[in-house]
Amino acid sequence: MQTSIEIKRGGSVSSALAAIYIEIPVINAFCVVVHGSLMTELYIVSSLLIIALGLIQGRLFKNKSASLIILTSIVLVVFYFITTLFYEPVVGVPYFILQAVFPFIIPSLIKLDWVVFFKTILILTVPCFFVVNSIFQLEDNLETIGMGASYSFLLPIIASIGYLIWSRRIGHGVERCFFIILSIANCVVFLPRLLFFGTRGPILSILLFLMYAWATFYSVKTPHIKIHKVRFFFVVMLFIILSFFFVPLLNLLFDYLSSRGVELYSIDKFLLLMDDERGISNGRDKITEFTLNAIPKSLLWGHGIASAPKVIGFVYPHNFVLQLLLDGGLILTSLVLIPFFKGFVAWIKYCSIQEYIVISVLLASIIPGSLVSGELWQNVSLWFIIGIFNALIIKRTSL
Image: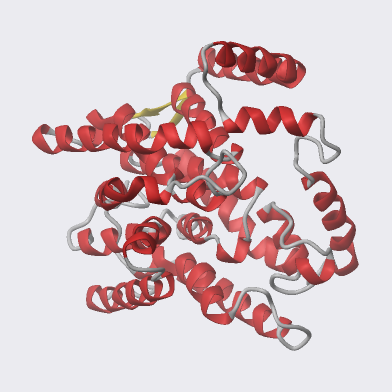
């Protein structure tokens, strides 16, 4: 039986380009330090190269799920331009196309070699080693790095941890040693900065990934993803304990670290928000309440792309599912999420070892953060993973 996403000849360059596309924030972080922001230029050039490779490979929308991907892309664009009839969306047309629509269709445009894709993500951080202090500058009056830097480097950090866990499954010989060293370097250079000065979301994503990697495994015989029942039980128990004793345990951890002269911004912020009227959600509960009240007012069609500032008075709802419902109603939400969940189930039931590793890394670095923060229509990685699962839903067609 053919797996849905397999390693194929001719896909190395296109796979590297796909990795570059979703890691442009990392590349641009280096560019900002040495030259200035090249975000738009990087997206335009890489998208044109991906399209050119798709034409060369004869790959453009050749899989069986292409009709659904084309339909969803058209609906997204139509929703956007209908929105412009009533007001100007906060996300401009170029960025809507480059950061939402195009990453969604990338998996259907080109051949993808997931091992090359994975290793490219690890390599792209190398230039940042030389300017890391400039990238991770503390914000004024706060002992923290910006949310942008925190989330930009989350994927390569989780990918590095993933490679160290699973390297024997996707690497051999000298090449494996090289990427182990590179993964360790990524963790040494970037992980401490994220832990000590980063925002809460990326840190929680890393912890969730470690628990997931510990509680699941890949069955070669079946082949599909399985759960270590005993380990999964301990993970569930841990969540239950934390739900009841989170604050006392956090205070104990804070006291322990403080006694050793260690200070973590994420813990400080958790404790600070406990005594703040905004609560631990930092005001997100109020945003969620406003969003839930606004959704039924246009349940079928939604209020339009990037409508949050106009409809609820906040930049975005801090949850991609709620933003889909707010902006696109049940129509757009169903068109995006039903294939996503079907593809997710298909991936769990049958996947290659490369799929298990790489998609697990992508999910851990994208989904948790997208449920608590971020603008949906500028979330390149999220639309990329949605595009992957959309392309999996019909007979696990080869990408």
